[in-house]
Length: 386
Ligand code: DCP
Ligand code: MG
Image 1: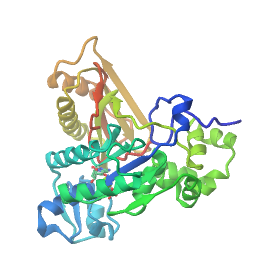
Image 2 (image 1 turned 120 degrees about the horizontal axis):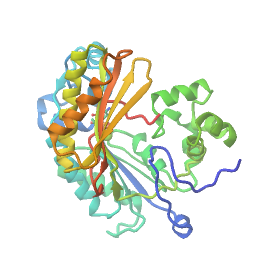
Image 3 (image 1 turned 45 degrees about the horizontal axis):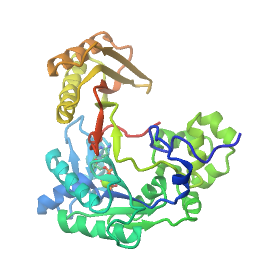
């Protein structure tokens, strides 16, 4: 089977629209910028007594999860999405700080304003990272690398925080590059260098391959980009379905997705992974109330209106279940959203098995077109795509 060089999806993408062939032939210049240990660095900036210390941002309690870990904490193996109790065991002197989303959002706006001085084509991926298409050098700096240097300098000057940047000819490579010399690093992958760069990397570094995806690949004997490169397209398709094509291209450093400054928001939601699996109805109800609060905050923040509420349950054995309810019109407010959510959960009780994750989503949104919208902050749940 031949795999076309142009296609609709690449790692981490959710259905990009392709440009015409002429546009495709013109090499792009893409920068990916990602703040270093974002929430933790903001805390260390604002509370100087935390500088140089291992810091975790997130809930310190029994069910708490680390949202961000300072680089000092990472030396002990502490990382995002780790249960806080595990983190404390690894690093007994770990200092926990609660999240301060308003401050992170304000910094996020500052860095986005900096990006927009260089290009309109800014695609935020989360509060702390974005792709920029700088093919057109509006500021006349002379090179994408020069623009990346200038952006890193301005971020340091205006926010007193450091960012890492990757420069390359597509999004997939630019994101890998920004991760390469973290923290406070810059890495450039030039045309012609992508395939060799990817060959040496462990596949778990590819955006879109989560821990479970990496495990599956390890079982199939794929550890690096080079291992992936050696696989035939038919073999990849047999094992990974349509994602196989994306993997085939990834192994070659190919990615044709454009930077999209306007995202169509299809849903808005949130989910939580619990440290201990939950099964007692009252615990589940409590957990649901917390998620209702979080998700409704996001809905209100974006002034989103939607008709469908979906409850997501992930069981102890990792099987997923979703149940949805729709109204003929937009949900009227928090009380109605909460009532639908509770009804969805009650219908499932008692659960056949304890759950490790609970989530809620509002979809069938009105309009749903949001210029340069910030995606909702990542939840402390796994962000992996498979
Ligand atoms: N975040 C979260 N839960 C996760 C992952 C991240 O709440 N599971 C939050 C906290 C992070 C921020 O999002 O500070 C940015 O996520 P990154 O993955 O970019 O991680 P960091 O910026 O913390 O570190 P790095 O220097 O590796 O980019
Ligand atoms: Mg970051």
